[in-house]
Image (cartoon, rainbow, N blue to C red; front, side, top):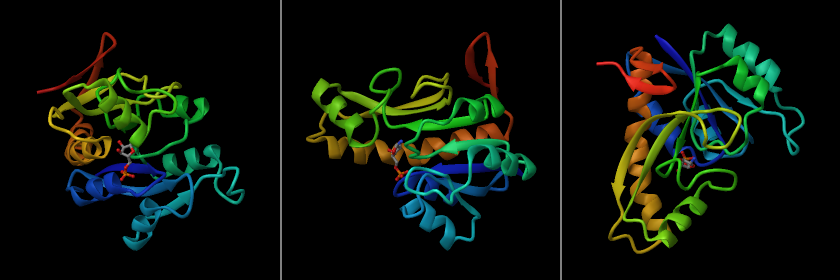
Length: 202
Ligand code: GRF
């Protein structure tokens, strides 16, 4: 069974989708929160998934990234999934899990990404641009916000959208399908990196 850990900071709808589509291929062995009072963490607790809260300015008792890395390795975690996780992952941790951390972003990268581009900020920028297409990107995590290699993308038609909130709603539905699908592809060992690009094996 392919073991994954999911990092959350907010309501956790992507975590729910990943949990819902949990198959014989993968299982969520841990949920890591940047804070202890968010929907994602509550969902994990309600479903008996082990939870770790990271140390932070407002939560001194939490776990450090170094200790977390040890625990995840001991538990045989093969993939780390950032699902609405708002903090930049420290570079030491990124190096320890090279090409094993992925993120879901609610737009078509490399546009509408980077520092401060999260949640409704992304959809407001997309709305203001008058783009007729937005979408979802799942990408590897490196040391810069939203800059790692793109693993998979799906477009969403937003030509009739009347507000950023409406774009968010349309895009979220696609996030909930694409993210579990990408995780399944990792579990099937279908994701390969060749000459600096990411491919899906047949
Ligand atoms: C999603 O749109 C995700 O792409 C973005 O933040 C949002 C988190 O939503 N990074 P949720 O916590 O999964 O409901």
